Length: 473
Ligand SMILES: Cc1cc2nc3c(=O)[nH]c(=O)nc-3n(C[C@H](O)[C@H](O)[C@H](O)COP(=O)(O)OP(=O)(O)OC[C@H]3O[C@@H](n4cnc5c(N)ncnc54)[C@H](O)[C@@H]3O)c2cc1C
Image (cartoon, rainbow, N blue to C red; front, side):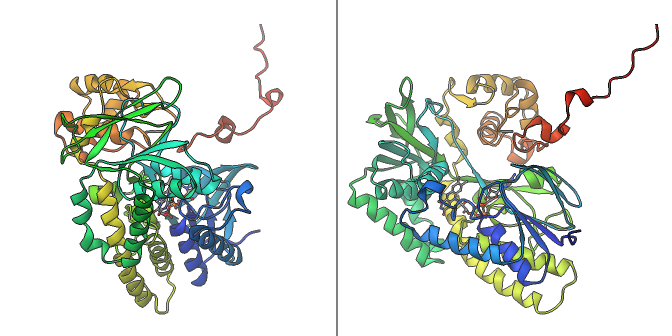
């Protein structure tokens, strides 16, 4: 029989990995679960099998160190396990290559990271258009370029990261198109100065793009992506301070791929499913769970770490993981210098978090950005719903995401609102002037991820089904 667990950590990115390591160092019995085949999360993602011999970049080296430390830590690692349901108390229900898995513990640290924030533009459903954050996965994990000639568009620091990675990998970046005006970057210099090392890293990306003579457009956005079976050209034009297209001249850029993204949203489906209280904070990506000083949510024993608690970036994430682990140890009654440890980690976390929050705010679209979505542009890809269809339902009184879902099925497909929810909320906000609190969030219900029906219903042999004997005539 295995010993009962003190703690489950969900998500083996920098936040969850640091939480598990710290919890082990404090003597807790810990299980760490992730759907990826190896720990590392988005930043320290392990390369796919074919890339193992490729030259190691700094993030890969850090990731390998992290993976080695986790394997030696005594935490039980459950990889390739997709968590699709959870219940209070806590049971974590997953499906993996060998079937279903349920873990139970009185404490849960949720570290699920963030998801992309797309703003739908005309042509964004064409093959060759991928998310900006998704492009990092292609480049890092698979060593694959998004295309031969790529437009990198949207907002925030991921623009520079992705464009510089494409250049470094030998690809061509046709243009970087940033909706934010250049001045907004200067406006964040104070917060950036909290981490001069990270600021220098961004400076190196910029230098690399300038050296490669990549055209950099600020205060501009994609008007439309054209092509029949894939991307052929991209039309860009100026936007005003609210990111609304202005009458200025549009220009066409030949390209066969587009990386498009407007920052990241905290992944809150798990904390929503478990009934934690949330608040809306645009500077940190939008909706996030309310937490106390030890990162415990309004549900006792449920802690949140990393970008899932507000997008603060990869350097703040491990510190929040450590802080949450200390919080769990204190909740379990462990003694020692835990309070002093928490104070020291909090101070370091605040410094990194200030930088990360400034980067997150740079990417955050103002409400006016909704003007980028044309009437005939598909917003909900799962259900094939255009802006015009959603606008009609909103005009008829669908003023919350739940009402809009009931009226149109927006958010009811496999993405569960992860892709379309933010754009749908922006449309309601633009039409009604209601606050995000009034508009609400997409509801979280199991299954959180698409899972085979057998994982829910259990496997059965047809012949074993109990068929009642026929009633006597
Ligand atoms: C697609 C993407 C790519 C990014 N690339 C970069 C980058 O290259 N550089 C950079 O500085 N920042 C990048 N970011 C931002 C970066 O993710 C964070 O700043 C940092 O990694 C946050 O760490 P974290 O531990 O909170 O989350 P993550 O690193 O995202 O880790 C979260 C982990 O939770 C797991 N998980 C989530 N839900 C489930 C579930 N239901 N079941 C099982 N496992 C689950 C995921 O598999 C993942 O391993 C990226 C973000 C995204 C969304």
